[in-house]
Amino acid sequence: MKIAASAHYVPSKKVTNDDLSQLMDTSDEWISSRTGIQQRHVSCGENTADLCAKVAKKLLQKSGTAAEKIDLIIVATMSPDCYTPATAAIVQGKIQAVNAAAFDVSAACSGFIYALTTAKAMMKLPHYQHVLVIGGEVLSKVLDWTDRTTAVLFGDGAAGVLLETTTSDSSFLSEDLKTYGNLADRLQAGLTEPLSKFPANSSHHFAAFKMNGRDVYTFATHKVPLSIETAVTESGLKLEQVDWFILHQANSRIITQIAKRMKQPLEKFPMNIAEYGNTSGASVPLLFDEMIEAGKIKTGQIIVLSGFGGGLTVGTQIIKY
Image 1: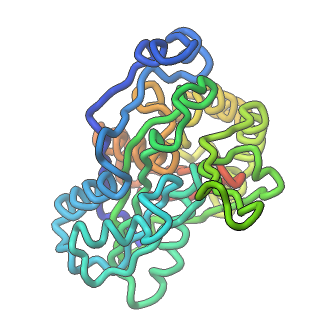
Image 2 (image 1 turned 180 degrees about the vertical axis):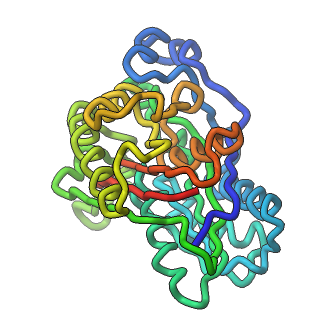
């Protein structure tokens, strides 16, 4: 399969670190020095499916593909519009892709990579020749906006790709997916606890975003390099042959440390976290599309796409653009 088009969309409202300092005990210096984040985009009225549908329409327009030609839509998200229907199903309705099957993938910040791998497997079947893979988040709706340890980190946005089958060599060379469920409690959001008795006093028990930052940092800086090295080796390439490492934008310190551990120049690890913050499942495709729009990613280059986060999970794809 090949990437026929890429696109992204972010809400227009920007919330700076100074804006957040009016809501909680924090400052621009505190946030930017620890994370690299200067601002984030926050949705006002648009839900996750709205953002993803705008990306889908851009992908159709860029590629000149009719909506009825889409066979499958996969949305990677940890902030769906509702438990059911799937966000992807809502997107399918919004763009009138009447022939497309649609479902969501839940792998948090690794979600887009997991969704790509799922699409890759399904596109070996004759029924799926045109596939939309989109990562989309409205994380602002699951945050505790009084908690400076988590609220300052995240932003809203969506991005994705249109995949098509091809008779030439595939653009996707290899992948590596890992899940560490024993660390599941290190990063959680939107928990609904089971009833402790019946009838219950309240309808549900909801928990906002919770994260053990130190453990997630250790996990990311150790497991992501291992995943990338495994996938690159499987592709028959060497790290030195990789032109760009497009990593999940969680924290600039994490990305810097990953580059150091892999003994690769930091210049090969682009970042846009200052503008968008951590957009979870949208993070990797958003940066990927920005790099294409800027003319930095060129035909024939070797690209590493790698996400990491809740699960805990890591996902890496090696592509030749």
